[in-house]
Image 1 (spheres, rainbow, N blue to C red):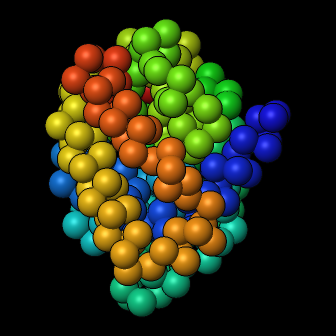
Image 2 (image 1 turned 45 degrees about the vertical axis):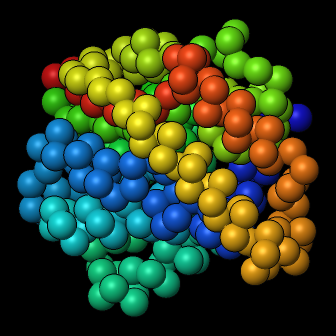
Length: 262
């Protein structure tokens, strides 16, 4: 499967309603609390322009627009997610502050130096060409401006087989990298790391949440799971492997901020 096919597959999966049911509105460990922690490290000021890469259904963008009074552009590979995010912005009365576009993180549809900050939550690990995506983050940032990332971190050589297939890639695991490798990818694009934090407990809470919601949906909405393609037979083993990998230090979740050189 080539890079475009992987991106399309991931985008299609994350546009499904069952994903929102299993992962929650934010679609990433730590939820809005971790998004706020990330935003607080970006020195956002009212009126600043922020780009949310892989913006999904708009949860992060709308939080930033409301809580930090910034103008947010969200870009996502899925047209379905773009439409849902636009609808959410309209419903929240934030359509002028939060604007959503369908596009590719590896070829961002914005001019050089457009943004005061870039955020990317639980998505860099899914991009087939991480170096190209990081170069695009740097290109659209102004000098001295910051990028903030929360993402799955992993030691690929230590992951069990259950966490290395296509389904695991969609779940933000299979192509996750060690934290120092993300920092190196950003550095190669001219983005110097300012801070890193580990939030493995947030990943464990999400694993527990997915397991609990899967068990509930087995009872209340089995047809929904069947139609979504969720493999109920494999799910318990995958979740158990993920939990064990976190305990072993082979899998985790991290926050990273970096700055573009002046």
